[in-house]
Image (tube, rainbow, N blue to C red):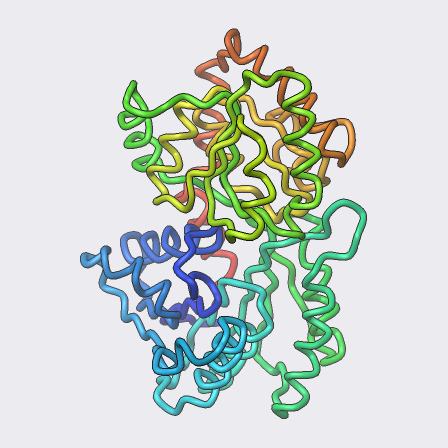
Length: 386
């Protein structure tokens, strides 16, 4: 198979200007492709993703952003706008025709997949790959299971069939991709599963270390991420309550956007600070200045913030998710079960141990080599384009 260009489809990432793990990875992949490969690179994206790429003016990447729903903002809810946005992008005649291209959807969202499939069918010799970020959480079906069953109905309604010459499902771990396989199985398409890793930016880590040196408040326990039903929201109040009972002097910080109604539930706890959504380097700076990092998430695909905590020499505490055990092993401390109280006990112990925790140089060097973006993308792109 001869591939001349790579088309990154990132319509769902960053629609509401959030810098999640998926968007961090998309930006890093675009930078790698532009600097280290001879492929022509195109980005089909949302306004939120385009906003981040505006600051990367040196990249020779053709960016095509769709702003078709901006005129409707203020008249409809964000959910309705997002659905309208996907439909208009799908129907738009202005998307160019691609041939001999790898169409690489950067999320597993059904409408991203639908639009990636459409692009793969626009010309001859195209192949299709879908990046699947999430896995089943603590023994319950992951939210996307139901969404993918509806996504299959969307495809049927649109009369669209998955008929790319090659379909590759890209996932972080062996547990990932189950829902996507179920999603496309009715189309009798042969699927190749490609396992990849997430990575980190060494430049961002260096800047974070410099920024954190005495200029930021040091928190005892820090969480970076979104709090919602699929990400441990139900257990978080129990976690904070137990932390207060065990040691009320431990100062906790949460970095990430949180809706006002949810945030109001936790304002009664005086030992927690909500810092809101921050830029990537600023997030890393707070991780570097904190004593312990923890994750109350009960469903993860990889946990890029957890990796960054490890590389910044922090003790990291998580729930005992299969993905945490498979990906990080002994590099993270695990709560004994999925209750907020169990996570709190593990965090308190980690805070006590943080004063003497000093990972060896050899330990960190091995992880730097395994998780550096260029090493990861070199193998990933070679596999997807062969």
